[in-house]
Image (tube, rainbow, N blue to C red; front, top):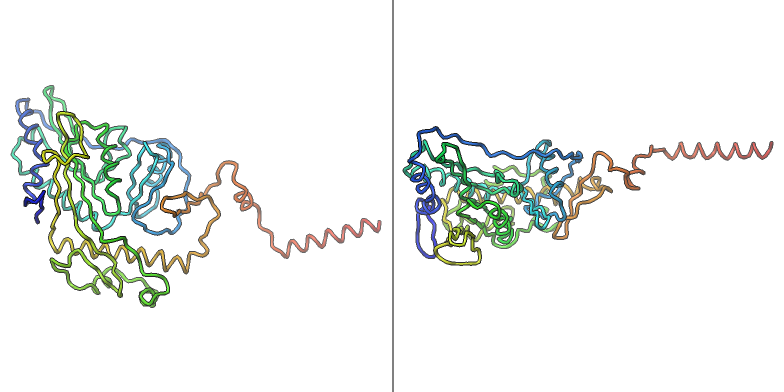
Length: 398
């Protein structure tokens, strides 16, 4: 594996060396203190007491990215509590932006997770090779952990590098030094917005790494009623991953990014995996995201191992296929009865997701009150009407 930074070739050891330099500096500053053992404090989430209504699940598209607007911090905290305790088997990742009151929801994809796992392994491997006294200083790299301060609790970086050390008083201290965010369904704008929020209340952060996985165009599934769609749905059974991948030709260095063509349709093609490193300007104490100063900025294209990349691309293509099959095929045949009159949460990009409350809202809407009325069959209604007419005639005769 190798990476190119501004036209220069750097191996992964040099790349991670740029990121792990503060370990050596901190090691030198801590080595003069006593031989106290170093404890590793765990990063934990703050618990919220907000009550959450139970939701009835509905089958929706696994669309990789959604933005839900006008969500208060209390509402988002309640959703976090609900999803952490619910029976949902696959949980999407979400980011909350208090300044705009927006929640961004992303479905994890194999290509995203593979890149993160590779970088995580690099950080651990090369940081452990830097000579230092691990009795006084150590590093840990967390994936999908929330930042520890209250203000940034809603922010979840893909990788967070933390340095633990013992100060001059013998007390344990920890500092968040590096953050990594990878975007496949996320946009560059979204990642930079998230970085801005994360560094706002965390002055110890020195380096930010952005990974952009560029797709060649926007994914589109086969159009309904086309020969490709009919052929893929002909058996009425969705292909499993092994069957899908068996139809893909072996990948080479030239084709490891795709296209992945199965059933006459291109399910995925990538352009590049780009990495950008932002270093904090110590003079101003800020990150200059708009600057391309080589002392604080580096950018390059990651060229990963063919086997690793090919597997991730093929698995992500299958992810697209499953999404299309469930949403376009299954929902067309089974979803007619799933339409609900319950309130809908509006989502950006002209789409919406239906969330039905299992317990009625206070007061209830007109529709909900009607739904709670006992159902009476037409036969019973007709009998009641006949009895009323008979009684009316008797009273007149009397």
